[in-house]
Each structure stands twice: as structure tokens, then as C-alpha cells.
Length: 211
Image 1: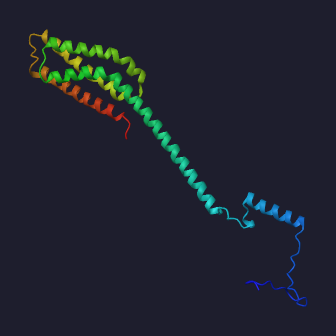
Image 2: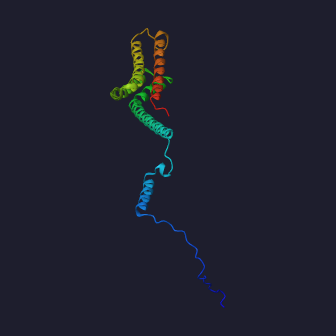
Image 3: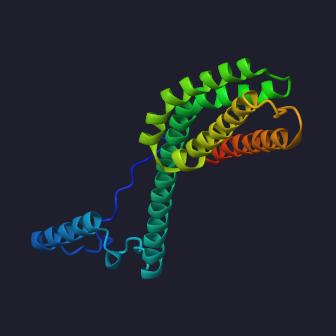
């Protein structure tokens, strides 16, 4: 006898009955397949997929998008204004550079002392700078003209007034330029010119864009 002996069932033994599975019709299988495909493509919550955003979530998303858009527009507008202001500041600085330098040179030399001839020569340099700048300053207009250009012109006029007073005094035997009423008038105009120049520089600085 072999180790594993084949045992056959007795003819009289009842065989175990396997449960029968009803056959699925073709039409039912096709309908099921189509339904599953529809759920997969459309992602319908009714098919057992994830639920979509709620009305509150949609509203919040729209509000966030609107706020981001407004912030971007504001930043863009601010950048545009800053660029425009920087361009105006640069243009005004360049247009008034020679005139400011010439006027400040006169102002600084007064602390050392100038005779009539040297004073006249310095004002001649200012006149050259003024003639070269005035057209461009007028063309720029705006704050460059009103808060920088006109004050510079005013300071120049103060220096010219001093020259006229000095010239008249030279021709007057009784006039003493270094003292008395004549000297007081001259000192007042020089002091006024200094203040005007300082204000013009401050006004120019205000044209620069703030960080």
C-alpha cells in the first residue's frame, strides 16, 4: 500500500451539492459598468465620491481671490507712482544742479569775503547757470518749478539787489558800504538768500519718493 492511498467515495454516498450562482445578464453588466464610469468621470457625491466645497467655502475662496487681486492692484499702482515720482525728482535734480551749485558757491564765499569785482564775477557765473536751466525748469513745471525753481530765482534776485546797492554806494561819496544803513540792507538780503537756498534744497528733497 502506498503512503497516500486514493480513496474513492462509495457509490451510495451522496455528493455535496455546490450552491448555484444565478447568471448575470449582459444588459445588467453593461448598465453597472456605465454607472461606474459616470461616477468616475463626474465625481458625483451621490456615487460615493468626496463631497464638493460648501457654499461658505466657495464664498470664502472668492473673497480671498478678490482680496489678493485688490492687493496686487494696489501694489502695482504704488510702484507706478513711486517710479513716476522718482523720475520727476531725478529730472528736477539734474535741471537745477548747475544753478544750485553756482548760488551756493556765492553763499559760501560770502563768509570769507568778496570785493565788488569778485562778487560781480560770481553773479556772472550764476547768470550763466540760470540761463541754461530756466527753460528746462519751466518745461518740467509742477513742484520743480514752484518749490525749487522759483526759490532759486528769488535767491538770485537777492544777490542782484545787493550788487545794485553796492554799485550805487560806490558812486556816492557819502555812502559807506561796510557799515550803517547800507550795510544793514545788504546783510538782510544775504541772510534772506541763504534761507531761501536752504528751503529750496529741502523742497527738492521732498520730491524724492518715500520708501
